[in-house]
Image 1 (tube, one colour):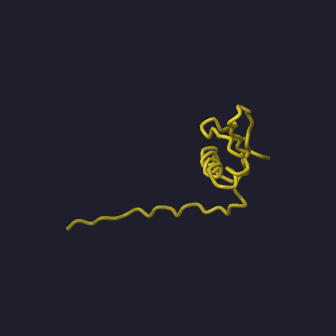
Image 2 (tube, helix red, strand yellow):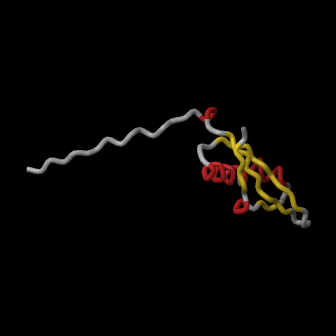
Image 3 (tube, helix red, strand yellow):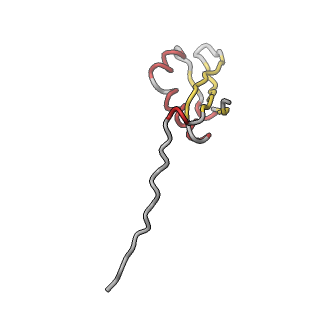
Length: 84
């Protein structure tokens, strides 16, 4: 007879979105005419990496695209700062 046991895994930590740290993620932009600029997103995320991922997703959503008026955004060059 073989007995097997499973170790219970802890439930994921659920933090309300309003309690997550606020990050300001800035990404460089360039317009079709060559003008350079930046677009900044305020996102709530637990870590730096999550902030970049969330901001990149937001950057490709329709409202952000419309705001840039055709300018390309460089999500790979994004930088995030923890807002205090």
